Length: 350
Image (cartoon, rainbow, N blue to C red):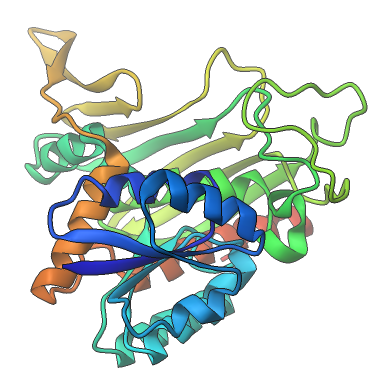
């Protein structure tokens, strides 16, 4: 039995707890949260025997085999390193840190450790992503030269005044929260090519307005009204893969004027293109008899969070290094930092 401890009691922690409950041979046996009453409620609902107010207490629980770090971004380094010191495997929510320096600390500690450390880039485990990856690897797209990637929500800022909207804690706004997902997904599909140049722009257009209204997620917290992060980001990135230059157009928002929430990636090659999204599955577009025809690709079913958790626990069981590498998580943090830097300097960065 793999005994799991979960740090945090928010939405993502709840998703992970529910997922572990569906994996044979694993059980959440401890949870920690700064508001103990919230953790106690979640523990009661999911038959979790131990509840800690201190994350350090959970890290030092000798009866745990693995921990899930579902905490504000600025706490990831401390508790991932703490878990490794006490001999535990770690699933760490994205981004693995709120800075590049922090991400590199985790990557270095993970490399030294004999334990499994996996960044939780969950979109890789979505059915459309798995199907698209397989198709792209087949080479049927020809030479890939361009990609479009977006993740947008409409009026869905995650709690104005919460840690999400406090740059000191989160490291940024919609870019580091949502944007990291499709930056990871897109570059994973390409095999993480070398970044050549980045031109980015971030902006705050919604959450700082008195007339802003919230459609989903939660509204202003009672803690404070801190909102010093972006709720929109865009970037144009050049990659170099061998002799080939690949470009990426990226856009991301917490609160844009879009009809529905969701992510979308479109990969363009000389022999065809593949489009994938959370709601429309996977479509391939190729020339047939001088016309562009659409072909739907079969997509596997299953909850992406469950797929991710099951994979991580299988890696723990087999003591197998996961295919979601820490160096890739550092790479994503570096792209995010380059977008912020480009926006601040108002020029392309290399």
